[in-house]
Length: 202
Image (cartoon, rainbow, N blue to C red):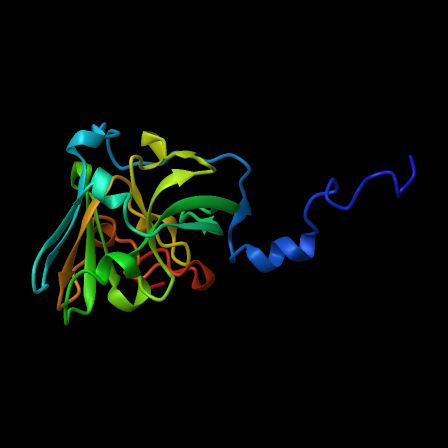
């Protein structure tokens, strides 16, 4: 068969392109694996809310309907799981953390994302502002499925995916860093996939 029979797009990604987008130790995943630390919460939208609490001038809370009045963004980006799979060009829709955090005044340096089911993860505030993080409720044009964190999850794509907390319900702003769920159990406190920051000491 002629070499020119296939279009460029049909051939898929070139190896060099993949190597530039896959962090060290990662492999390309076509599916979307489901990895959770516990059972999948099922939160009715009428009961869902999102709060910012902690070191703020006034706590802030949005219902599901109020959350959807906020400015939204569509983001296409690569995600990387600490279990070594990466998925490219995932498309999400949601509200940037910068938009949410603009609703409060704070001098805090860190944030704890808290979730249904008790999961938490910690992040420096500078890692979730300036277009680095979102609360998303839509994946590939569809409502985010519960097994992937629906109705809403945190999305911090430049860090390993355990930092993109499923079933997120709010942010607690704090002055001093505190480890979250996996960070207390031996995972790296930061989680940069390009530095392979998987576990303590990495």
